[in-house]
Every structure is written in structure tokens, then in C-alpha cells.
Image: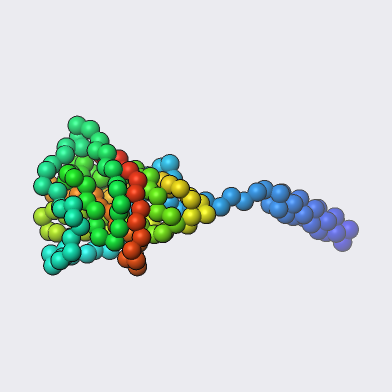
Length: 179
């Protein structure tokens, strides 16, 4: 009986110490989009938009020139992106693994943004929504990610527009497109 009492006291002491340590460790809140390691976006799980019947296309048209990412990255200057798709000036082929990487710094003022890849041949945009709060990034916020499961034999343009509710808000920034 006496041995079981000592054991209970020892377990209580260990649990008290463990709880004290947990309460002393600070917690850090992080944004899901702030990352130094690229986060993959599976093209098969993206939302899809058919642009075949798109009437009000962005004033910058779908690109007609090719940029070989195998010989170097492409830098896009994003000026006044709004609720219509803004495309890169060139289209790209993904690497042999079916990936196109993008590293962006955007100023959205805390509004959500959409980033996608346009299949040049089929006229479909595969896109992903990024939700950002101005609490984390009041000026610019980084997005380091990539699309994967792209067809290595197809051509794609990277594109941006303002959030999923498509309210008119503008943002700007820059992006590096690479393999």
C-alpha cells in the first residue's frame, strides 16, 4: 500500500513538471502562406475555370510567346492586378516532373488573391485561393509555391487576380517563375 502511494506521488510530480514546461513555452502564430519551403498545389485538386466564353478578358492578352524555364527563370512585374486574370507575358512548359514554381511578393492589403496556371491549349485556368490577413503582412506578403501534375508536353501561363469573391480590389507586386 505504501509503495503505491509513493508511485502516485511520483507520477503526480512528473505530470506537474510536464504541465509547467508546456505552459512556459511561447506559442507563435504563423500564416499558412509564409513559407521558405515551396508548398505544392496539385493541379488535379484545383478549382477550374473555362475561359472559352470569357468576354471581358484582361487588357493584357493571353501570351503568344514562349519562355524556356530550362535556360533561366522569368520575372513578372505585377502592376494593378484586379478582378480579371492578369497573365505573364510568356507561356512556359513545366519541368519533366510536371512542375512550375512561383515565388511572389504581393501587396494585397489583406484581401485574398488567386494564383493559377492557364492551359494555353485548352483555355482552362487551374487556380488556388490564398487568404491573407493584413495582421501578418501589412505591406507585402510572400508566397513560395508550385503547381504540380501539369502535363510536361503542354504550355501554361501563370496568372493572378483578386480574391474568390471577385470584389474589385487591386494589388501589385512581383513574381519569379522557375522550374
